[in-house]
Length: 250
Image (cartoon, rainbow, N blue to C red):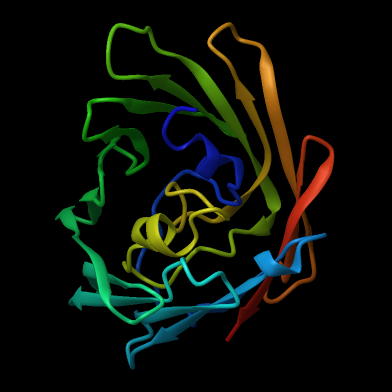
């Protein structure tokens, strides 16, 4: 399958209207995410988020996953912005690192992607190193993603993501720390790299093939409430519960 599709099948976030602005309001801060598989306990895992005195992410430690998965991520910041991320494997050996590139308040490059924004600071394009890209069109209740694979194949509508405005996005992370890096590394398999600084959570997700036929569909069923944020989210994929996320906050 093409790049990013399996990642996007596990999306629980959305692109809403504007980036989060700095505020004096005390934020609700995500401290851990527990991933629970309905039938295979070996896949269960916990992502614990550790922060510095400024509430920016210092590290994320993964427990409960298989030995081949990364176990620790370390985040460095310049001011309130992400500078770089180091990834360590199960033997606590550095396995990868990536540096963030910023333009104003927008993250424009990280990992294998570059990002383009519109005048409202919404992502309208993400491009891979081989030239393949997704372009994004935003409306009041959804975002439509067109995919253009590197080569001669024409672009086509790949998927549509609908917003759930009844709950806040649990990945709306504090200030300008990088939500994109968090998802490229930390939450791959449970979320998207389009997320974070936006207020709404995803509701439904539809994926289409090049002929326009629906091939996958999913939805998040949220429950619980912590200052407007959900405490659990069950992801139903093609009619079956694929996993449940449990969120803890401070």
